[in-house]
Image (cartoon, rainbow, N blue to C red; front, side, top):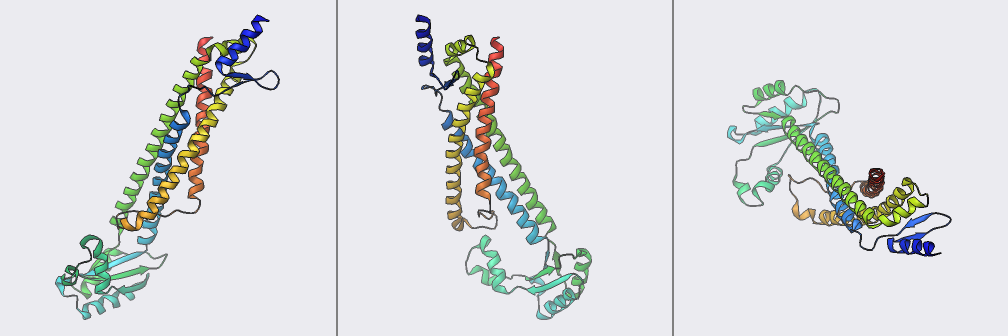
Amino acid sequence: MASRLRSRSLLRQAGLTAGPGPALRLREARNKLRLDWIVATMAFLAALAFAGALTMSDQAVHWRTSLSGSLTVEIPAEYGASAADLSAVLTTLRATPGVQRADPLTHDQVGRLLVPWLGASALIETLPVPQLIDVTLSPDAVIDAPALARRLAEAAPGATVDDHGRWVGHLLRLATLASLCALVVVGIVALSAVVAVTITTRAGLALHHEAIDLLHLIGAEDRYIAGEFAREALLLGLRGSLLGVALAIGALYILIALAPTLESVLIPTLAPRPGSVATLALVTVVAGGLCGVTAWATVMNELRKQM
């Protein structure tokens, strides 16, 4: 009788309570490290970094599709860019196989292109801006840009062709580097979460060592004990990551609302794509599963050491 009372006393002190049948359930320790808040912080950072990687990936696709099927022809202002030169260049372009459309830009359109760099000032009206021609290519067109540039130079002295290849290449490399950096951040955050769960689980093992010894005495297997810790870590991880991802989504929508005031040709387009919120919600599932698996592995490893 005294032994049974002592066993019950040990269970209450360790935070254990009897469940249905012979099972025992591990309660949440009152002095545990705030694992849910730690996971919430990690999930917030991971969701923001992951959203950044998705944004740069989408922007790279936009840059590739919007610039790869077009050319820009320039007649420098220093050569006069007369109406006769413009007409000769347009005739040459429209006679070139693969050119779908060739539209000259007006002075006002060129001025609007310079606004992000020079601002909306009267200075643009006094600048000798070149004559630009926007050329749209057919979807399956293959243009020899150097040969076209030579023909255009014969039609109008100083005319040049920009196929955006180098510009697109620089942008794609920038987008790829930014995406990789964001994914590295996600990996570092995940590793930090694993370390936090490991430390918290070891603290729980130290706190409940008497109850764990008692469980071993009454026949409980290491898998059962590890399962109790893993279940608690899973629930705490899901709760914390849900809060962190929700805050990250809110922060992203605030940033999207402020994006018009930050408009620039150098800033990626911020817009929620279809399914982006659902994709970020996967962070919650991954974070919870990571917490559960880490707690399981930590407990099994520590209990094997004690054998």
